[in-house]
Length: 271
Ligand SMILES: [Zn+2]
Image 1 (cartoon, rainbow, N blue to C red):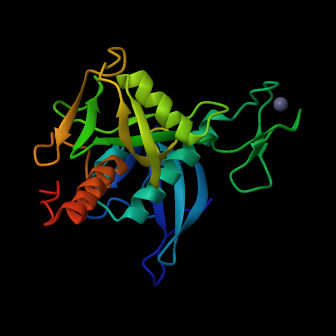
Image 2 (image 1 turned 45 degrees about the vertical axis):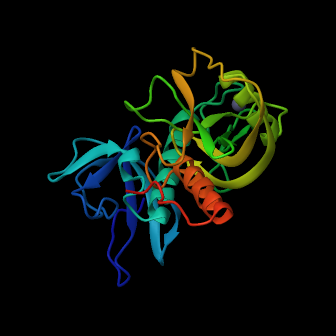
């Protein structure tokens, strides 16, 4: 177990978690945690490097040291460097995977470390467990100059986002897009095009983003998932997910493409 820090490059970066919450020190240096923080380390693993500095995920128990606090990782989204956020998400998922696979799901025996990176192996039946990822599709549907945004009951007040849903077994991601849109708001889409992806460690998704166009049907939101869904003009958008999220990037991409197609570019949603 590596517990020290400190080399010329600025030392190791340790992403320290208790449950799903990360230890943040002050506001400026949330991820640079010194080696000795007076907490009991339950699990620690090297997970990569950023600008030559080795990165570690650590699960600890005990109270946060003076001047620090355990906080939801979401508070870092769009605040810290993308690579730091991605590494923090990696740490969170590796810790969660280790915690959730201490016993074999097939035979119930206690697992041990496997030989491959991020693997746990059952000594009884040989089952291997890697961190699980749950791919999800997220899609911004447009109709002319308008975009479809919806809110689920658990969103922050007033916030709307693009539609999203988990990929089901046997589905292509494009099929997920068409199914989710149909199930959530009752319309059909066409011209589904890939935009980009984003690791989304809440708890273990990979968000796969698409743009699509309305192909037919009127909005009929499924009340079990969608509190409200509407077509919005891009100059009168509601509160959006934070900068740094793929949902926000999809909206900005649409605005930027319309700007290129229709003449002078409109102001972006950043403000
Ligand atoms: Zn087993």
